[in-house]
Image (cartoon, rainbow, N blue to C red; front, side):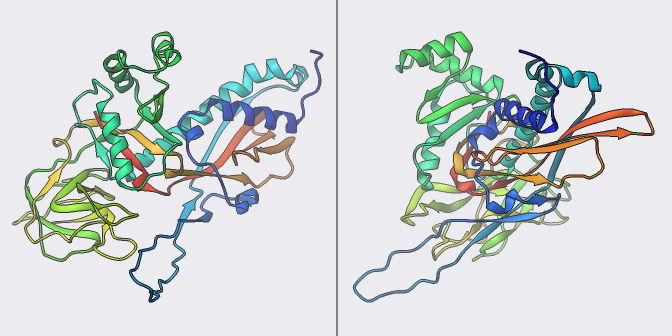
Length: 401
């Protein structure tokens, strides 16, 4: 291929292609975006994402009207990442393949890795959890349990994925190599060390799966006060005066508080799991601690989450032993997590600048080259502006090990 002078537009488009190809977890998340994302944005801007309506069913011929509640959740563009490097004007005479190999592909891979890493931290927002923290996975049974939990909470079929850290994936592959499945999937396990499609999920390995350290919980924790609802729970009975008695991301259940299917509002037969949304400390004397939790405790209406409010003195059970470190592997529907990627404002008075947006995925990347007079150098940079949203936490499940 003949060498041609590379323009900023060509560089931006090639960077975007390499970035898109290098994505892992992000590739399987929802990347649909509001048209507002197509406008120039800055860090801290927010976009509303509408959640689907939930209704209850009434009996008889007489109409029972329900208010339409347009529930929106905000996706904040709070992540600004870049890779900066230097190349000379002479390098612009390279063909795009060599230029991409030397500069753009390594930069795009680094950016994609960071986007995946921040996306996988959304696992801290998930209450559904299976597996025993600190106990390695040895079979596909835990993945099947995760599928059951997703079914219990009305997760749509199809577009279901599981992402595992290398150790967890290895354990499941060893334990499932004798399962009956398509020959090409078995070949994939042996040749590439990956699982492919099994148990209703598309499996992938992710080196960026986040680790979670369980809080230093202790004592005999109990609900402190009857008829509590909402996203705050008063408790006591913890070990006195402990900082981090529970950590953001810890999961617990309450005796006799069962989850409900969001479509039928019938009990799932399983204790509702709650996730702690902020670190909690215990006080002196009776070990009190007020917990910020998800989901909210709601006992009726279209947003009902549980069969009953916890009783005063109901026992609280934390998933996992104190201070254990566990990977937050994820089973999830594509729409559980949303990535929003916005166009960055284009700077003026620079040597080269352009951005590229992929209309299919909503991904956007900006390329700029400018002269640094202090160092007497030409500096190039690739920038992305994005934000993650856990849009449907009930459509995801942590697989802990």
